[in-house]
Length: 464
Image 1 (cartoon, rainbow, N blue to C red):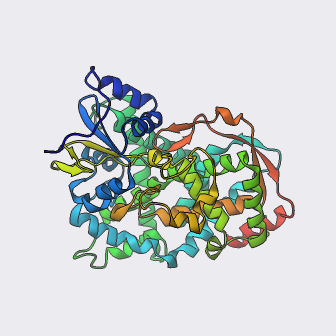
Image 2: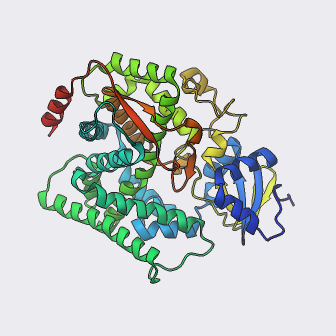
Image 3: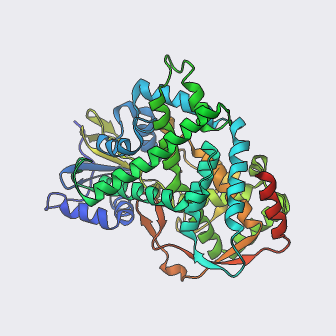
C-alpha cells in the first residue's frame, strides 16, 4: 500500500493551517511547493486536502484520471445557486451534451463580431478619458468587461445600467469567495443580510438573461452571437436530445458571469506591469502603432500583434485570475505520483503556485514577455502553464477572453499610455474570487501622439 504524500502537521486538527490558508493563500500554497514538492497533503479544519503542483501530475488529475476526480460538490452547489445546471458544473453525459450545445458559439466564424463589440465598448469608455486624468483602473476595467461581454455574447447595451449589474456581480463574486472558504454553508433561505444580498444578486442577473431571451424570441432576429446559437440549439438534436429553455438560461448566465472578474483582473494587471517596465511598454506601443496606426482593429489584427499576445500570456502567468481551480474530490482512493490519495480528499491545483515554480519558469517574479516567444513556449512543459485550466474541462471561453483582452488593450493603446500613481512596492495581489490588485490600482493617463479624438468619435458613431 502506497503512503500518503508529505505535508505540514497541525496539532490543532487543521485549524491553524486553515487560518494560514485563509489569511494568505498564495503564500501558503507556494510555501507548500517549496517545502514539500509536487504533492503536499494537509488539513483544512475537518477536511483533508492535497496540493498537486507538477505538470505531469496535473495532467493525471485533469486528463488521465479525470473521471476519478470530479469537481468538489459543495463548491458546485454555490455556483448552481447563481447560474443553475450549466456546463461548468455538469458531469458525465450531461456535460457532453451541454458542451456540444455551447461550443458553436466559440468557433472562429463568431469572433469578428465579438472583436467588433469589444472595440466599440472600449472606444466608448475611453472617449470619456483625457490625458492627465488620474483614477482607479480596476472599476474602469470592470465596466469594460461588463459592457463588452454583454455586447459580444448577447448583443445588449448595458452602458446605462453599469452600476446595477456591477453591484450584482460584486455580490456574486463575494458570495462565491465566502462560501468556498466557509467551513459550513448555510441554506440560501436563511434570513441573514448576506443571504438577502445573494438572493437579490441572483435574481437581478437571472432577470437580465430571461428578459434578453424574451426580447430575442420576440424579434426573431439571429445576431450570430452566443444567445442566438443557444436558442437555435433548442430546435435541434444536440448529443441525443434538445436542450431546454431553462438550460439556455443557465448556460447564458454562467457565460455572462464567469469571465467578468477574470477579464477585469487581467486587464488591470497588464497595464500595471507595462507601467512598471518602460522598455516593454515602448515595444508594445510601437507594435500597436506599426500594425494599426489610428484605424479600428478587427479580429484578424489579433494575429498580427505577437508582442501584445506575449504580454497578455506573461501577465496571466504572473497573476492568473483563477489562482486556484475548483478543487477536485476523488470518488475512490487513487494513486498519484506514487502516493495514496484517499477518497474525499480536496485536491487543489493552483495555477499561481505552478506558474511561480522556478523549475518551470526561471526567475518567476520577473516580468518577461519573451518567455512566450514561439521558441521558448515550445520548450515549456505541457500543463506548466494553465491560466484557463487544462484538459477536456479547460475553460470553453479561453479564446474569447484572450480576444477581448487583446482588442481592449489595442484600442486603449492607440490613444493612451499609463503610469502608476502608487508606489509599485505597495501593489500586491488580493486572492479573492479572482486575483486583483488589492485596494485598486491608481493610474495616470498620457496621450499617444498622432491619434485624433474626433476620428475615434466618428468611428463610434459609424459603428452605432
